[in-house]
Image (cartoon, rainbow, N blue to C red; front, side, top):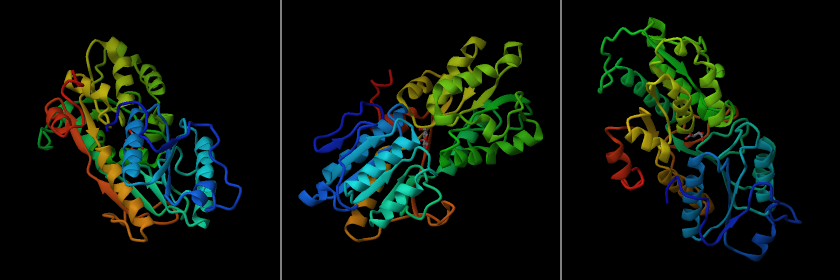
Length: 368
Ligand code: BGC
């Protein structure tokens, strides 16, 4: 199972399309029809959108692993709409779900429905994206998101020749012209990625080795709602003025492969390829990296994330305590959510075979 096939799901997985009403329980939470008639625990899995490639693979991995452990799964994609996701979660709570796994669209919009889940003693695991502003989130399974940003910022510097392969400054004085993109403002990860990237870029911005000719240096200015490729392409095009007039665009900080590919498409008219970063090792992006276009991406093995999550679900339903490796980083405004964070890995033209093909994530043939 990997992150780029269709959203077809294994046998035994209850799939409900976005917008469809789920099974409605007549009774209070926890006494839905599935519980009454079936002892098999039901796990509700809320995913953000099938439009962004990675979530298709995540959904497949999570549901396949839950199913293979004998759980029933109710997985729904919210078409990137927070209100739709709230409705879907409410249906899962009403149906008597025994646990919820939630990759949020808007991590701050779920307080009410999760309060109901909490009242019904349904454990909630935030999947990949932190859920904020509520104590009704029990655990967080994700990657070291700050590190993702550090890898992105460092890749940009290396692609520009500001640091060497070991990350040591080369002394290159520049100035290098760069533009900066950030992820969706409603996704906590976007801030963490940005802060991580800025922690390595800031000194070079301050010293003038890097310049941002658009002047748009705040995260809010570079943020792309919904991580949407079309919006990213529009923003890049709107910034092209000075570069069409001959200034060289040396690099672009991009937080996600879909955005990176849109940036590369928008800058194609310049006749050269700027250094562009990314994230998720999406198929098109990895092909682009292999072809020497997109400079780098960040690989996060979503099979491992699914494994960690499924282990959390199992521990909770067995009355045990899930394993965590971070109890300090993710304060959601109400509590510090205990987390298990996996390690992200940088991928470039030099390393994609080793990282992605040797690990079985893609076959060499798929990347041709
Ligand atoms: C995920 C990234 C992904 C982005 C867009 C973030 O929350 O952590 O892996 O690129 O959403 O889907």
